[in-house]
Image 1: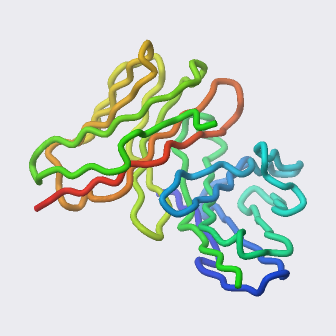
Image 2 (image 1 turned 180 degrees about the vertical axis):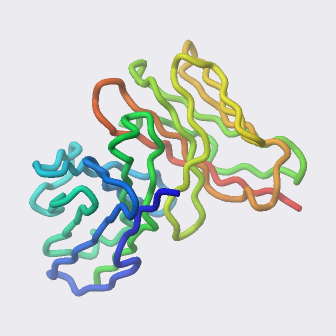
Length: 118
Length: 113
């Protein structure tokens, strides 16, 4: 079946550094990918919608300059947490849907990336 | 503002019995709903979906019921198995807004052998 891969699965960084997380659709093309953040014991919160070839659409309250999203190809979206601080520590998850399937197609999730900022 | 709510953070059920997980939403424009299952430190995996033109969808042991007037959906698992122990999220999507899904806070299901 379709697979979405995230890398790295776990990253520890120092405060003030930037971290890049990759999300790849392995056997399908995705014009749209989604980035979520999960706080402990809380829901998946949609951060932004990543659009191939154009700017990402951010949810209210999400800092665009803090969380840079690039969707350079139909199979890759990246999330860069810039100047990370301890409060950015969280579990980040991406998802994607096969472009051919349309809006009601199954949404596939990556394995998630746990970011710890010291 | 949480548009999709799962008011029960946890649920324990005996193996073989029915598990019923509930989800409420506030946005009447939601027209497509999904249930996801999540194990710790893993991404969610899709379970079952339902569109607003239906009130029931069944897939094996899993059945989702949608009550549009009450803005309520539920997931029934029968018979429940220990491997079903996980966190279950419901999610909803609004028509004509692309592919954005809004998730509930999740219900942790424990199936006791």
